[in-house]
Length: 436
Image (cartoon, rainbow, N blue to C red; front, side):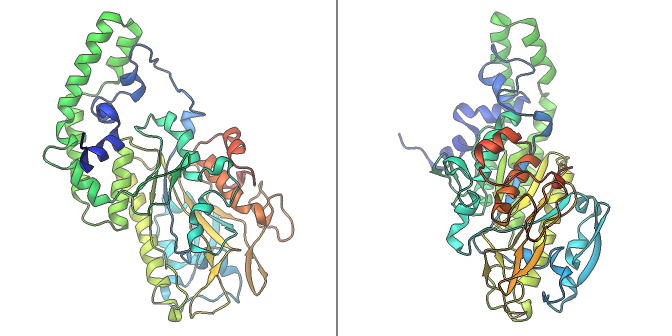
């Protein structure tokens, strides 16, 4: 049998028998649709803590963008140069109750976003572009070589009842793995074309709703309990809701015109609304591989400005869809860049300092870790996990464990239990100071 690319994509996104679409159309959990006679109203399966679970949108890049160069922390040292451009001029702003100094563009984010933002200083322990998959495995600190996005997805999928457990890449590239197998990259425009096709699935949500409910009602009328029938009646979506959701999703997808970050953001939020996957991976450029970047104005400054604006756009899109409390955003790449080595003529690869940006309701605003002068540039410091402060020469999170600590902390933020994190990440510890 020949399976078209379109059918394969629909099966990947929504499962065999379009069970994901039926869940979307009816408002019922996948577990109930798949096993209506066995399902219970309080069935959390293997979910650790449903109340703490968050969808994760992760931005990452092979380029090793200079995200670390203009964030709070790097402005605390007079010998770290920044471009002579007002967009990266040292500017005080508040992260919650803490006043920090960073590039002016960071201060342009809405205050409610800044009040959920943490800048986590750490090392990635590599300066090689192709090692992004290794960094996603926390440089050997994960068991069975599983990637951090996949560890998170395995823990979160049961909490949300998503159609699939696997993370989805929407423009970051084909590097993700899950249980050792590679995952494809899905272009936003391709997603748009499949889902908005005149015979596509979103055009028939009401039909799917009515057909699915008729089948379940018949089954439960014959073999179900009163509790199961009441559960069905309480959760089921109306035909009006199904029609409204269909129109809303079609409008959102129709707005995708390219595969750039804005298209990726729209696609990621839409797939969350459709409960397809708990982890979506995108790429927001932040300066790229800028070895030669005269005055840092060719790439670093304009892409830092556009990158912050795209983060703001993502947070605004989440808020517009009432998802700002259910989705955490994070950005970490293969490595950071040198801070003083080349002045303002460009930045080289740097394994010893990087900054992960985390934004979400579970995040305590502030700066975790710090920098110390070493080897002609700046290293990430060890960290005190309780206070979050950088401790040169000390701290209970060593320099070599800062990447693992970042991974555990991000995992804890999105609702992965400490037991699961300790089982799957062998280095570092949760930095509780980064958690709300």
